[in-house]
Image (cartoon, rainbow, N blue to C red; front, side, top):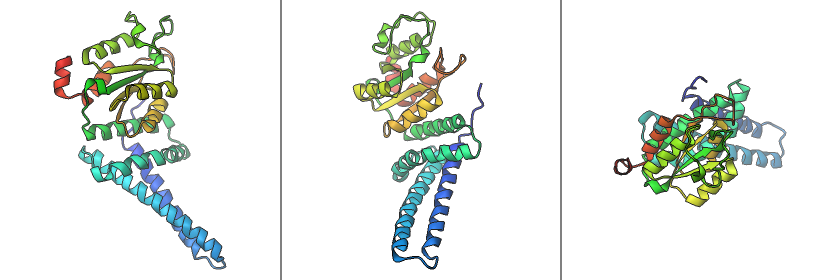
Length: 259
């Protein structure tokens, strides 16, 4: 089993990215005042330093909002939008910085998913069952199963050879929507079809992190799948984690009524 990365890894790399931007601002500011620069050069550098300063301010606001939310377990409303924008904007930079530091990309993505889940839970979003969408990957289905479930998940015979039947039992119990996706295109189709107010998603680190970013500002709780046979083949998922994520979005009354 892979070691669980610290939830502080992603915020630390975001802080490192912020430091890089600040250093770029300082370097550009220095170049403005280097002798023998023409007026055109100075205008270009002024424009560059202004742009970088705005980016640095955005990253600082997002970093502050993230830290405050994680520390207090409550959303800091004025900084919620800057936090979301900063994460979306700096995510590629954070991955690149992690690679330079020799940090596993999957560890960074796992840390991001954990941080995202805490940020979403801090918002205390509650939705009705029909407003909740469970998205799972097709690789949860047994590879030898002849029944196609990506078009209609109800084709599952619930034979017990994979987790799909148990997830459908949760769907029947609580009344949420469910889709089985082969990739990002089909996942986005389900989002457009069901128009959910909240999503619980099961996938690998790469697909989960990209899906969370793509569906912003819809709140997504991510559950990383288990891959005992390698990626994209007969994977599994913790039903307890999935049900816990579902409980996070459903009001207590809805849980009891459906349970």
